[in-house]
Length: 139
Image 1 (cartoon, rainbow, N blue to C red):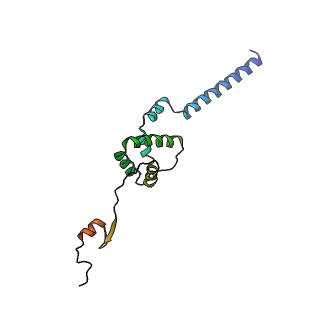
Image 2: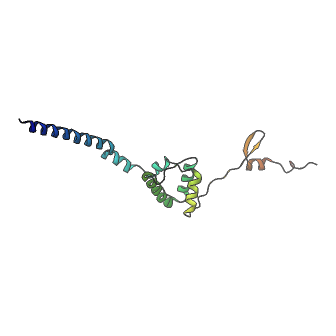
C-alpha cells in the first residue's frame, strides 16, 4: 500500500468517526418516536394544569362546569401556546379569570368574606346571623 492510500484510509476513518459522533449526538437531542407519542397523547388539560398558579385550578374547574364546550377550546389553545413558548409564565386564578372574561365568559366564583371575631375568622354571613337585634343597642 502506498503512503497516499494509507493517508486516504486514515481520512476515511476520521470522517466515519465524525459522522458516527454527529449521528449519536443528534439522536440524543431529538426526542425518540416513543416520547413524541407520549407528548402527543398527553391530555391538553393535564399539561395546562401543570402551568397553573395560585387558585388557577379553581377558576378552571368553575369554567369547565359553567361553560364546558368553550372552556375545552380555550384549554386546547392555552396548552398549545405553553408548548410553543408563547406563554412562558404560570397562570394564576386572577389571570385565568381575566382571560375567560375577556373572551366573553363570565365565570362565576364563590365569594367569601371573613371577619375576625374573638380572635378567629368567621364568615360574614355567620357573624350577621349570630348577631341578635339588641347587640348594637345601648339601652
